[in-house]
Image (cartoon, rainbow, N blue to C red):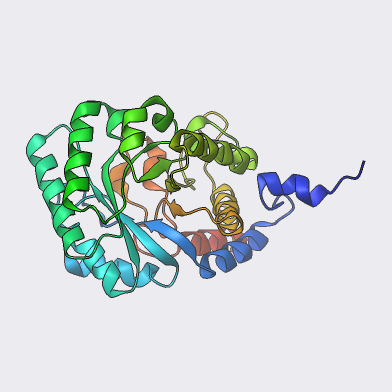
Length: 305
């Protein structure tokens, strides 16, 4: 029997256990600068939250920051200024996964669907996402969600359409899975209490469960990430080092296995503190002031202030 340690470690990602914070920082920077498939776009500045009107200027400012690093962006809504996001993204040569945010307000839902269809007909939608974690939250019934999905597919038959939810929902809800052109699976080892050193193996199994449920349909990881600040969640520990390690391993796997991943998220957003607890505000690669977060915080820790 022959043993190749590097092959064993490849299942769990790059062996980062012997890296100093400075070494991690350098590898993180190289990984970020090499580019990624996709990034979830965070439009809300400090003091804003969903429902507030966002402006073209703030979207453009943040798009300018992230455009060197990503081929795709994901947006979450088609109202309140969010409909500008895919227009600006296409202007900058970035492809778009555009979401209609569906909840328990029928009037808002209808506006979102109309907005998504309009953007697609204008050529600004590369993949359409009808709803995000609607089943997880229980905002709609399966039949109600399927009605919206069929409406969108009928209106924009040439645009790939899917629904976003936790990876396990697609095995539990075959009618929704069947209605999708693409499976848009959220995969968060953090939220299942997985220690960072095993997180890539864990995410691979999440992905594979969605693949099996999809029965041949393309599976895209529509969200994954790791917070750098906040309270531990069982075996999952937020920290600068863990967040950098998770990003590095996720991006290497994405490139090696040709897995389309939308990393969550671009910028920290304070409004997310709520159901997610204190970690909610710290998932960004850039902080709420639009500075590269790990570069600043890691350097401060290295020089002692």
